[in-house]
Length: 113
Length: 113
Image (cartoon, each protein chain N blue to C red):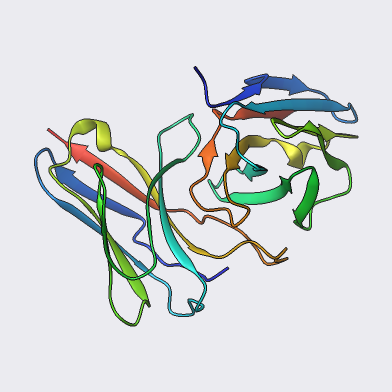
């Protein structure tokens, strides 16, 4: 059983499009996160949700919006995609809101052409 | 989040013990030290976490001196499958910090036969 799953694994789209990446965790964790790993391999947190409340909102463009229908899901919606959005996006979850001991998903490689 | 400094890369041979040191001179009182492992095309995987002195689990040991300005991840008797990037992360994220929560480039460990 996959602890943290993401769909799709690969996403190729054109500039200007709107796309969503889904994330689900079956660990019963209270907090979920979205990270972006760029071409230089820097892994940077974008958002985290704890009990449906946004507790960390990194300074990302407002084209990115996290949506959490329930505690087990945190989806990432991206509007008006740009070339610079190309990266690998990782979803993660943890039991504590402190961010310790996170479990990561397999990643979604987004390519914007 | 405290800034961390790690060696960019390390080489080792199978069966050897590997020690990866991370410097974090501006670590705060509430900060924990966490290490993650990342294989190519996968999300990071939690290895170990500690606050002070020594922590050991089935995978690794973490040594933290009294001043906590550095930490050393110790991998006993590495194998080829330990070839990965290892990230040191220091911080206490709860509280909605707007700081740059970036993993950094990590240390690329290459284990040779």
